[in-house]
Image 1 (tube, protein in one colour):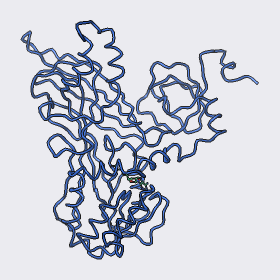
Image 2: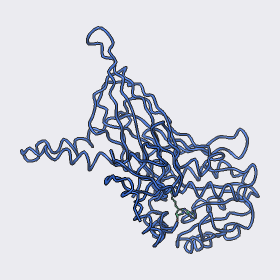
Image 3: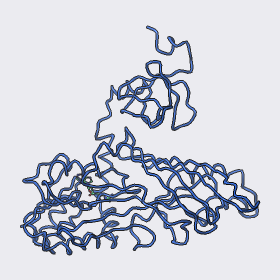
Image 4: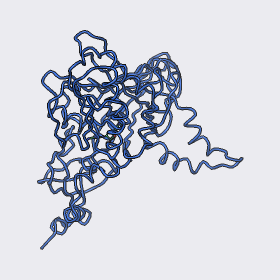
Length: 426
Ligand SMILES: N=C(N)NC/C=C/[C@H]1O[C@@H](n2cnc3c(N)ncnc32)[C@H](O)[C@@H]1O
Protein backbone atom coordinates (compact mmCIF):
# COMPACT_ATOMS: atom_id res chain seq x y z
CA UNK A 1 0.00 0.00 0.00
CA UNK A 2 1.44 3.37 -1.00
CA UNK A 3 2.26 5.72 1.90
CA UNK A 4 1.26 9.38 1.64
CA UNK A 5 4.91 10.08 0.91
CA UNK A 6 5.03 7.71 -2.05
CA UNK A 7 1.67 9.06 -3.30
CA UNK A 8 3.02 12.58 -3.14
CA UNK A 9 6.19 11.41 -4.98
CA UNK A 10 7.80 14.07 -2.83
CA UNK A 11 10.44 12.55 -0.60
CA UNK A 12 10.63 15.57 1.70
CA UNK A 13 6.97 15.26 2.79
CA UNK A 14 6.40 13.68 6.21
CA UNK A 15 3.09 12.72 7.74
CA UNK A 16 2.29 13.94 11.27
CA UNK A 17 -0.68 13.51 13.59
CA UNK A 18 -2.23 16.52 15.36
CA UNK A 19 -2.26 16.10 19.14
CA UNK A 20 -4.68 18.94 19.82
CA UNK A 21 -6.99 21.37 18.03
CA UNK A 22 -5.36 24.51 16.64
CA UNK A 23 -7.24 27.57 15.45
CA UNK A 24 -4.70 29.70 13.61
CA UNK A 25 -4.42 33.36 14.56
CA UNK A 26 -3.45 34.63 11.09
CA UNK A 27 -4.42 33.90 7.50
CA UNK A 28 -1.18 32.04 6.75
CA UNK A 29 -1.78 29.55 9.56
CA UNK A 30 -3.57 26.22 9.04
CA UNK A 31 -6.45 25.26 11.37
CA UNK A 32 -6.73 21.61 12.33
CA UNK A 33 -8.29 19.25 14.87
CA UNK A 34 -6.78 16.67 17.15
CA UNK A 35 -6.17 13.46 15.19
CA UNK A 36 -5.86 15.17 11.78
CA UNK A 37 -3.04 13.74 9.67
CA UNK A 38 -1.01 16.61 8.19
CA UNK A 39 1.63 16.48 5.46
CA UNK A 40 4.66 18.52 6.51
CA UNK A 41 6.45 19.93 3.46
CA UNK A 42 9.03 22.15 5.15
CA UNK A 43 10.36 23.04 8.60
CA UNK A 44 11.54 26.66 8.24
CA UNK A 45 11.95 26.95 12.01
CA UNK A 46 11.76 24.71 15.07
CA UNK A 47 8.54 26.44 16.08
CA UNK A 48 6.54 26.74 12.80
CA UNK A 49 6.33 24.21 9.95
CA UNK A 50 4.75 24.50 6.45
CA UNK A 51 2.10 21.80 6.20
CA UNK A 52 -0.91 20.67 4.19
CA UNK A 53 -4.34 19.40 5.17
CA UNK A 54 -7.06 18.52 2.62
CA UNK A 55 -5.05 20.28 -0.08
CA UNK A 56 -4.73 23.56 1.88
CA UNK A 57 -1.25 24.65 2.96
CA UNK A 58 -0.23 26.90 5.84
CA UNK A 59 1.93 27.33 8.93
CA UNK A 60 1.33 24.97 11.88
CA UNK A 61 2.88 24.97 15.41
CA UNK A 62 5.35 22.06 15.50
CA UNK A 63 4.65 21.42 19.20
CA UNK A 64 1.07 20.36 18.28
CA UNK A 65 2.27 17.52 16.02
CA UNK A 66 3.64 14.04 16.58
CA UNK A 67 5.52 12.17 13.88
CA UNK A 68 3.05 9.63 12.52
CA UNK A 69 5.27 6.65 13.35
CA UNK A 70 5.88 8.06 16.81
CA UNK A 71 2.15 8.71 17.14
CA UNK A 72 1.46 5.03 16.38
CA UNK A 73 4.28 4.14 18.76
CA UNK A 74 2.65 6.38 21.38
CA UNK A 75 -0.70 4.73 20.60
CA UNK A 76 0.90 1.38 21.37
CA UNK A 77 2.55 2.32 24.64
CA UNK A 78 -0.13 4.96 25.19
CA UNK A 79 1.26 8.00 27.08
CA UNK A 80 -1.20 8.32 29.93
CA UNK A 81 -2.63 11.67 30.94
CA UNK A 82 -0.78 11.36 34.26
CA UNK A 83 2.47 11.10 32.29
CA UNK A 84 1.55 14.18 30.26
CA UNK A 85 1.07 15.96 33.61
CA UNK A 86 4.27 14.34 34.91
CA UNK A 87 2.30 13.65 38.10
CA UNK A 88 4.72 11.13 39.57
CA UNK A 89 7.64 13.57 39.38
CA UNK A 90 5.50 16.59 40.29
CA UNK A 91 3.76 15.20 43.37
CA UNK A 92 6.94 13.30 44.26
CA UNK A 93 8.77 16.61 44.55
CA UNK A 94 6.09 17.89 46.95
CA UNK A 95 6.36 14.77 49.08
CA UNK A 96 9.70 16.03 50.41
CA UNK A 97 10.28 19.14 52.56
CA UNK A 98 12.57 21.08 50.18
CA UNK A 99 9.86 22.96 48.26
CA UNK A 100 7.60 23.36 51.33
CA UNK A 101 10.52 24.85 53.27
CA UNK A 102 11.18 27.26 50.38
CA UNK A 103 7.54 28.34 50.28
CA UNK A 104 7.18 28.62 54.08
CA UNK A 105 10.47 30.57 54.28
CA UNK A 106 9.00 33.06 51.80
CA UNK A 107 7.67 35.58 54.33
CA UNK A 108 6.15 37.91 51.72
CA UNK A 109 4.08 35.05 50.27
CA UNK A 110 3.06 33.41 53.54
CA UNK A 111 2.35 36.68 55.40
CA UNK A 112 0.12 37.79 52.50
CA UNK A 113 -2.09 34.72 52.97
CA UNK A 114 -2.12 35.25 56.74
CA UNK A 115 -3.11 38.89 56.19
CA UNK A 116 -6.03 37.73 54.03
CA UNK A 117 -7.29 35.44 56.82
CA UNK A 118 -6.80 38.05 59.56
CA UNK A 119 -8.49 40.86 57.63
CA UNK A 120 -11.46 38.59 56.85
CA UNK A 121 -11.60 36.73 60.18
CA UNK A 122 -15.04 38.04 61.17
CA UNK A 123 -16.60 37.16 57.81
CA UNK A 124 -15.01 33.69 57.85
CA UNK A 125 -17.11 32.75 60.89
CA UNK A 126 -19.19 29.61 60.15
CA UNK A 127 -17.91 29.54 56.54
CA UNK A 128 -16.75 26.37 54.72
CA UNK A 129 -13.28 26.72 53.16
CA UNK A 130 -11.33 24.60 50.66
CA UNK A 131 -7.52 24.95 50.73
CA UNK A 132 -6.44 23.49 47.39
CA UNK A 133 -2.92 22.10 47.37
CA UNK A 134 -2.50 22.80 51.07
CA UNK A 135 1.03 21.34 51.31
CA UNK A 136 1.92 21.45 55.02
CA UNK A 137 -1.51 23.02 55.69
CA UNK A 138 -0.23 26.48 56.68
CA UNK A 139 -3.22 28.33 55.17
CA UNK A 140 -5.71 25.90 56.75
CA UNK A 141 -4.00 26.32 60.13
CA UNK A 142 -4.18 30.12 59.75
CA UNK A 143 -7.93 29.77 59.10
CA UNK A 144 -8.48 27.57 62.17
CA UNK A 145 -6.24 29.68 64.42
CA UNK A 146 -7.11 33.22 63.33
CA UNK A 147 -10.77 32.83 62.38
CA UNK A 148 -13.75 30.60 63.17
CA UNK A 149 -14.77 28.80 59.94
CA UNK A 150 -17.07 25.81 60.45
CA UNK A 151 -15.01 23.52 58.19
CA UNK A 152 -11.71 23.69 56.31
CA UNK A 153 -11.03 20.99 53.71
CA UNK A 154 -7.26 20.82 53.25
CA UNK A 155 -6.68 18.99 49.94
CA UNK A 156 -3.21 17.65 49.15
CA UNK A 157 -2.30 15.10 46.49
CA UNK A 158 1.27 14.32 47.62
CA UNK A 159 2.41 12.03 50.42
CA UNK A 160 2.90 15.17 52.51
CA UNK A 161 -0.82 14.85 53.38
CA UNK A 162 -0.16 12.27 56.10
CA UNK A 163 2.21 14.71 57.83
CA UNK A 164 -0.24 17.54 57.32
CA UNK A 165 -2.79 15.47 59.33
CA UNK A 166 -0.22 15.28 62.16
CA UNK A 167 0.38 19.05 62.01
CA UNK A 168 -3.38 19.70 62.22
CA UNK A 169 -3.60 17.47 65.30
CA UNK A 170 -0.36 18.85 66.78
CA UNK A 171 -1.84 22.36 66.63
CA UNK A 172 -5.24 21.39 68.01
CA UNK A 173 -7.15 22.14 64.78
CA UNK A 174 -8.61 18.72 64.07
CA UNK A 175 -12.15 19.90 64.97
CA UNK A 176 -12.12 22.36 62.07
CA UNK A 177 -9.53 21.13 59.55
CA UNK A 178 -10.00 17.88 57.59
CA UNK A 179 -7.08 16.76 55.42
CA UNK A 180 -8.12 14.97 52.23
CA UNK A 181 -5.40 13.26 50.22
CA UNK A 182 -5.90 13.21 46.47
CA UNK A 183 -6.03 15.38 43.38
CA UNK A 184 -8.49 18.21 43.93
CA UNK A 185 -10.22 17.47 40.62
CA UNK A 186 -10.83 13.85 41.68
CA UNK A 187 -11.64 13.89 45.42
CA UNK A 188 -15.14 14.19 46.89
CA UNK A 189 -15.76 16.98 49.41
CA UNK A 190 -18.49 16.49 52.04
CA UNK A 191 -20.16 19.74 50.93
CA UNK A 192 -19.90 22.84 48.71
CA UNK A 193 -17.56 25.60 49.95
CA UNK A 194 -17.96 29.35 50.51
CA UNK A 195 -14.26 30.11 49.92
CA UNK A 196 -11.71 28.40 47.65
CA UNK A 197 -8.21 29.46 48.69
CA UNK A 198 -5.06 28.20 46.96
CA UNK A 199 -1.46 29.22 46.42
CA UNK A 200 -1.14 27.96 42.84
CA UNK A 201 1.06 30.54 41.13
CA UNK A 202 4.14 29.24 39.31
CA UNK A 203 6.95 30.89 37.38
CA UNK A 204 5.55 33.39 34.87
CA UNK A 205 2.32 32.96 36.87
CA UNK A 206 1.09 29.85 35.04
CA UNK A 207 3.99 27.37 34.88
CA UNK A 208 2.98 24.02 36.48
CA UNK A 209 -0.61 24.88 35.39
CA UNK A 210 -1.91 24.08 38.86
CA UNK A 211 -4.40 26.82 38.01
CA UNK A 212 -6.31 24.26 35.92
CA UNK A 213 -7.02 22.26 39.08
CA UNK A 214 -8.22 25.44 40.83
CA UNK A 215 -10.66 26.20 37.99
CA UNK A 216 -12.01 22.63 37.92
CA UNK A 217 -12.50 22.70 41.70
CA UNK A 218 -14.19 26.12 41.43
CA UNK A 219 -16.67 24.79 38.90
CA UNK A 220 -17.41 21.72 40.99
CA UNK A 221 -17.23 22.83 44.65
CA UNK A 222 -17.55 26.63 44.96
CA UNK A 223 -21.06 27.76 45.99
CA UNK A 224 -22.87 30.32 43.89
CA UNK A 225 -21.52 33.66 45.07
CA UNK A 226 -18.54 31.96 46.73
CA UNK A 227 -15.13 33.68 46.90
CA UNK A 228 -11.92 32.80 45.10
CA UNK A 229 -8.62 33.62 46.82
CA UNK A 230 -6.73 34.88 44.86
CA UNK A 231 -9.61 36.61 43.07
CA UNK A 232 -7.50 37.91 40.18
CA UNK A 233 -3.96 37.62 38.82
CA UNK A 234 -1.86 39.78 36.49
CA UNK A 235 1.37 39.15 34.61
CA UNK A 236 3.58 42.24 34.41
CA UNK A 237 6.31 42.94 31.82
CA UNK A 238 8.99 45.62 31.53
CA UNK A 239 11.85 46.21 29.01
CA UNK A 240 15.05 46.21 31.05
CA UNK A 241 18.82 46.39 31.25
CA UNK A 242 20.66 43.30 32.45
CA UNK A 243 24.26 44.48 32.40
CA UNK A 244 25.65 42.06 34.95
CA UNK A 245 23.94 39.00 33.43
CA UNK A 246 25.09 40.07 29.95
CA UNK A 247 28.66 40.60 31.20
CA UNK A 248 28.66 37.25 33.02
CA UNK A 249 27.39 35.18 30.07
CA UNK A 250 28.55 37.10 26.97
CA UNK A 251 31.22 39.72 27.58
CA UNK A 252 33.16 37.12 29.55
CA UNK A 253 34.27 35.40 26.30
CA UNK A 254 35.96 38.55 24.94
CA UNK A 255 39.17 38.20 26.92
CA UNK A 256 39.26 35.41 29.52
CA UNK A 257 42.84 35.26 30.86
CA UNK A 258 43.96 37.54 28.00
CA UNK A 259 42.73 35.16 25.31
CA UNK A 260 40.10 35.81 22.61
CA UNK A 261 37.21 33.35 23.10
CA UNK A 262 34.67 35.35 21.02
CA UNK A 263 34.00 32.41 18.63
CA UNK A 264 32.09 30.91 21.59
CA UNK A 265 29.69 33.86 21.79
CA UNK A 266 27.12 32.42 19.34
CA UNK A 267 27.07 29.28 21.52
CA UNK A 268 26.65 31.42 24.63
CA UNK A 269 23.74 33.26 23.03
CA UNK A 270 22.04 29.99 22.13
CA UNK A 271 22.68 28.36 25.51
CA UNK A 272 22.00 31.27 27.88
CA UNK A 273 19.71 33.71 26.08
CA UNK A 274 17.13 31.47 24.42
CA UNK A 275 15.55 30.22 27.65
CA UNK A 276 13.90 32.29 30.40
CA UNK A 277 16.09 33.00 33.47
CA UNK A 278 13.68 32.16 36.29
CA UNK A 279 15.70 33.20 39.31
CA UNK A 280 16.40 36.73 38.09
CA UNK A 281 16.37 39.65 40.53
CA UNK A 282 15.79 42.90 38.67
CA UNK A 283 16.83 46.20 40.33
CA UNK A 284 14.25 48.99 39.97
CA UNK A 285 16.91 51.03 38.11
CA UNK A 286 17.18 48.28 35.47
CA UNK A 287 13.65 49.12 34.24
CA UNK A 288 13.84 51.19 31.04
CA UNK A 289 10.16 52.13 31.14
CA UNK A 290 7.19 51.92 33.47
CA UNK A 291 6.09 48.28 33.82
CA UNK A 292 2.78 47.20 32.34
CA UNK A 293 0.27 44.43 33.14
CA UNK A 294 0.12 42.45 29.88
CA UNK A 295 -2.23 39.67 31.04
CA UNK A 296 -5.07 39.93 33.55
CA UNK A 297 -6.93 36.83 34.76
CA UNK A 298 -10.31 36.96 36.50
CA UNK A 299 -10.49 33.80 38.63
CA UNK A 300 -14.30 33.85 38.50
CA UNK A 301 -14.64 33.82 34.72
CA UNK A 302 -11.37 32.22 33.52
CA UNK A 303 -12.02 28.87 31.80
CA UNK A 304 -9.62 25.92 31.41
CA UNK A 305 -9.84 26.17 27.60
CA UNK A 306 -8.65 29.82 27.85
CA UNK A 307 -5.34 28.51 29.21
CA UNK A 308 -4.33 27.00 25.83
CA UNK A 309 -3.43 30.41 24.39
CA UNK A 310 -3.33 33.70 26.28
CA UNK A 311 -2.37 36.86 24.37
CA UNK A 312 -1.35 40.29 25.60
CA UNK A 313 -0.17 43.52 24.00
CA UNK A 314 2.22 46.16 25.23
CA UNK A 315 3.45 49.63 24.36
CA UNK A 316 6.38 50.95 26.43
CA UNK A 317 7.78 54.49 26.27
CA UNK A 318 11.51 54.57 27.02
CA UNK A 319 12.10 57.09 29.81
CA UNK A 320 15.90 57.14 29.91
CA UNK A 321 18.75 56.19 27.57
CA UNK A 322 20.15 52.73 28.17
CA UNK A 323 20.77 49.29 26.78
CA UNK A 324 17.70 47.15 26.08
CA UNK A 325 18.92 43.66 27.04
CA UNK A 326 15.54 41.98 27.42
CA UNK A 327 12.16 41.85 29.17
CA UNK A 328 11.56 41.02 32.81
CA UNK A 329 8.25 39.60 34.01
CA UNK A 330 6.60 39.02 37.38
CA UNK A 331 3.06 38.66 38.68
CA UNK A 332 0.65 40.19 41.19
CA UNK A 333 -2.42 38.52 42.71
CA UNK A 334 -5.29 40.17 44.56
CA UNK A 335 -7.54 38.79 47.31
CA UNK A 336 -10.91 40.55 47.45
CA UNK A 337 -12.56 41.08 50.83
CA UNK A 338 -15.39 38.80 51.95
CA UNK A 339 -17.21 42.00 52.88
CA UNK A 340 -18.39 44.17 50.02
CA UNK A 341 -16.20 47.26 49.97
CA UNK A 342 -13.65 45.67 52.32
CA UNK A 343 -9.93 46.14 51.71
CA UNK A 344 -8.27 44.02 49.00
CA UNK A 345 -5.00 42.29 49.89
CA UNK A 346 -2.22 42.26 47.25
CA UNK A 347 0.74 39.91 46.78
CA UNK A 348 3.15 41.60 44.35
CA UNK A 349 6.29 39.71 43.27
CA UNK A 350 7.81 42.71 41.47
CA UNK A 351 11.04 44.65 42.13
CA UNK A 352 9.33 47.34 44.20
CA UNK A 353 7.84 44.86 46.67
CA UNK A 354 9.34 42.56 49.30
CA UNK A 355 11.34 39.78 47.61
CA UNK A 356 9.66 36.37 47.15
CA UNK A 357 10.93 32.91 46.26
CA UNK A 358 9.58 33.42 42.73
CA UNK A 359 11.94 36.38 42.19
CA UNK A 360 11.42 37.60 38.61
CA UNK A 361 11.87 36.04 35.12
CA UNK A 362 14.25 37.51 32.52
CA UNK A 363 13.83 36.99 28.75
CA UNK A 364 17.09 38.07 27.05
CA UNK A 365 17.19 39.44 23.50
CA UNK A 366 19.60 37.72 21.10
CA UNK A 367 21.65 40.92 21.17
CA UNK A 368 21.28 44.15 23.14
CA UNK A 369 19.95 47.31 21.53
CA UNK A 370 20.71 50.87 22.59
CA UNK A 371 17.58 52.88 23.23
CA UNK A 372 17.00 56.56 23.94
CA UNK A 373 14.40 58.51 25.86
CA UNK A 374 11.38 58.95 23.62
CA UNK A 375 11.81 55.60 21.85
CA UNK A 376 8.88 53.19 22.08
CA UNK A 377 8.87 49.40 22.36
CA UNK A 378 5.58 47.82 21.39
CA UNK A 379 4.43 44.32 20.58
CA UNK A 380 2.68 41.21 21.78
CA UNK A 381 3.18 38.40 24.26
CA UNK A 382 1.69 34.95 23.67
CA UNK A 383 1.58 32.20 26.32
CA UNK A 384 0.86 28.95 24.49
CA UNK A 385 0.32 25.85 26.58
CA UNK A 386 2.08 22.70 25.44
CA UNK A 387 -0.62 20.38 24.03
CA UNK A 388 1.29 17.33 25.21
CA UNK A 389 3.31 18.25 28.36
CA UNK A 390 0.43 19.80 30.23
CA UNK A 391 2.46 21.63 32.88
CA UNK A 392 4.58 23.45 30.28
CA UNK A 393 4.13 26.40 27.97
CA UNK A 394 5.97 28.48 25.40
CA UNK A 395 6.16 32.23 25.73
CA UNK A 396 6.51 34.17 22.47
CA UNK A 397 7.39 37.85 22.50
CA UNK A 398 7.22 39.99 19.36
CA UNK A 399 8.28 43.60 19.56
CA UNK A 400 9.33 46.57 17.45
CA UNK A 401 11.35 49.56 18.52
CA UNK A 402 10.42 52.92 17.11
CA UNK A 403 13.21 55.35 17.76
CA UNK A 404 13.04 58.93 16.82
CA UNK A 405 16.63 60.19 16.64
CA UNK A 406 16.85 63.94 16.05
CA UNK A 407 20.34 63.63 14.52
CA UNK A 408 19.33 64.92 11.08
CA UNK A 409 16.87 67.56 12.26
CA UNK A 410 13.98 65.44 11.06
CA UNK A 411 12.41 62.50 12.75
CA UNK A 412 13.14 59.27 10.92
CA UNK A 413 11.50 56.48 12.81
CA UNK A 414 13.64 53.44 12.42
CA UNK A 415 11.92 50.19 12.97
CA UNK A 416 13.76 47.31 14.62
CA UNK A 417 11.86 44.05 14.96
CA UNK A 418 12.48 41.20 17.36
CA UNK A 419 11.06 37.91 18.50
CA UNK A 420 11.85 35.66 21.46
CA UNK A 421 10.30 32.23 21.73
CA UNK A 422 10.98 30.72 25.14
CA UNK A 423 10.05 27.22 26.26
CA UNK A 424 8.86 27.52 29.84
CA UNK A 425 9.15 24.15 31.43
CA UNK A 426 11.54 21.61 32.93
N1 LIG B 1 3.74 26.57 42.52
C1 LIG B 1 3.12 27.02 43.62
N2 LIG B 1 3.02 28.23 43.92
N3 LIG B 1 2.51 26.17 44.42
C2 LIG B 1 2.61 24.84 44.21
C3 LIG B 1 1.94 24.18 45.38
C4 LIG B 1 1.77 22.92 45.27
C5 LIG B 1 1.17 22.14 46.41
O1 LIG B 1 -0.15 21.78 46.03
C6 LIG B 1 -0.22 20.40 45.76
N4 LIG B 1 -1.03 20.26 44.55
C7 LIG B 1 -0.79 20.76 43.33
N5 LIG B 1 -1.78 20.44 42.48
C8 LIG B 1 -2.68 19.74 43.20
C9 LIG B 1 -3.93 19.13 42.90
N6 LIG B 1 -4.45 19.19 41.67
N7 LIG B 1 -4.61 18.49 43.88
C10 LIG B 1 -4.08 18.43 45.13
N8 LIG B 1 -2.89 18.97 45.49
C11 LIG B 1 -2.21 19.63 44.53
C12 LIG B 1 1.21 19.96 45.57
O2 LIG B 1 1.36 18.59 45.92
C13 LIG B 1 1.95 20.85 46.54
O3 LIG B 1 1.91 20.38 47.87
